[in-house]
Length: 105
Image (tube, helix red, strand yellow):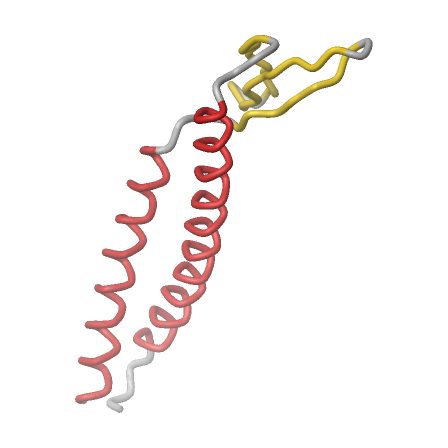
C-alpha cells in the first residue's frame, strides 16, 4: 500500500511539472528568427506557424544583435522544455498504468 501512495504522489508532482513547463513554453515569443539570402542580400524573417501554415514575417536587412541572441536563447530553451515535457508525458503514462492495477502492492 505504501508504494501506491508514493506512485500517486509522484504522479501528482509530474502533472504539476507538466503544467509548469507548458506555461513556460507559452511565455516564449512565437516562431524563430532566420536569415535568408536572396540575390546576394541577407534578410531576416521570423518564421512561425499560423492556422497550420508556415508564415514568414519580414524583420529587415539588419536586426539588432540582441534580437538574434534572444531568439537563439529562446530556441535552446524551447528545445529543452519540449524534451522535458516528452519525458514527463512518458513518465505520467507509466505511472497511470502502474496505478491502474486493482491488486494491493
